[in-house]
Length: 115
Image (cartoon, rainbow, N blue to C red):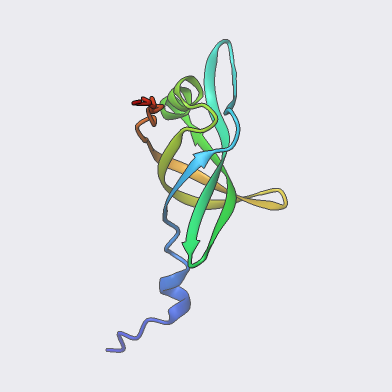
């Protein structure tokens, strides 16, 4: 019995990613009768390579209740971790978020000057 599996058969079935980034703008939502069907936002994901830092911007789309939560709670500057897959949207790629972790907001530090 031949158990050989070609590379094409195994690679084509895998479409999953994990990415962290910072929202570069407030999310937009689409729906009807005050029901959010989808939420779209853009993130910048930074890759640090000595001595430079490079950012890649990606569009993310989330559906259902998770999309409604993203539309309500996410704002520009918030950090997120996303588990999802890649899909094509017209002429570009979009990340379809299946799990979105809202990272803690950074507290503004207060500086105290001692004289």
